[in-house]
Length: 371
Ligand SMILES: [Zn+2]
Image: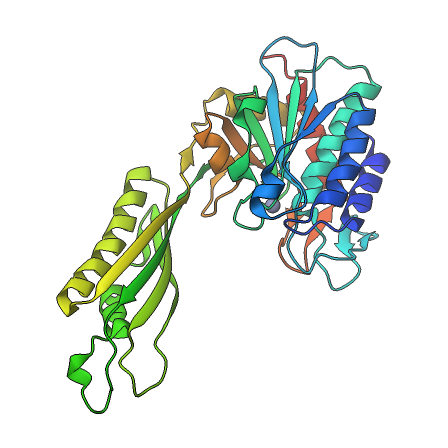
């Protein structure tokens, strides 16, 4: 049975182990010991060395005796700042908060603790369960860096539950946008701004014309776009030769995502051509959108598990990307599930012990689902 005290202790222990993005080694090593002691196979890929971190993504295999394909459970090892020397305290109101001026790191320790307790409980009770694969990614908070180097050949499951979103248990994300980043460099021509300004081509003016022509903000019901930064030029007496723009667009529709990125690129090219400047535009697909039907088997299993432990499933769509977007590209259909964390990425972050307990119960119920 899920053991609340053991779960709470594991949660508090893990929040104490510093685990910033790209330096997840200590937490990964602690978890490897725990899961190995439970008879699971733990492997680590090369993601760490590829992203400049000290640790790769972890893959934990826990074979089960129930028939049916294995299920993937996924979390991330890293946390945002200020996340060093966290001291988690359970209040009399049943809420866990950080005592100091740090985050709590319930994002994503709540998910990790729930999965560890799930395996401990299943093993302790000798309970038949599906074969379980657990993926723990690194660098998730740093633009999903670790998951981009995931080894899909190390994962057998085609259905996944990613324990990594805010709110009381019962929430599932069915839809998330894709994301394209644009890095733009405009090169004009420098000239003395007082003596012969007409001989120059201002890269900054070209950038202004280009940005002004773009559709930005909430472009349509499923698409957004934004300029992140503009930089360039130098002294006021020189017509600016160079200007850099960073921008992004997101859409829940893959075709609209590409259309919007191409539209932004086109605005830059037209403005540059008209002024006689040169434009370099690099589009980088960070991740593609996904959309899961509520009738899909992965969602149906979630709904069954919720019903069994008295939760009402609540389906949402989100504006942000997660490891799930990348897994989806590898043919894995996953739901991002809430695991009790609240007000994440702030020093007000908190987690109710009851929600943590229910998250572990939900995970276990998914793992013993016979269908
Ligand atoms: Zn997270």
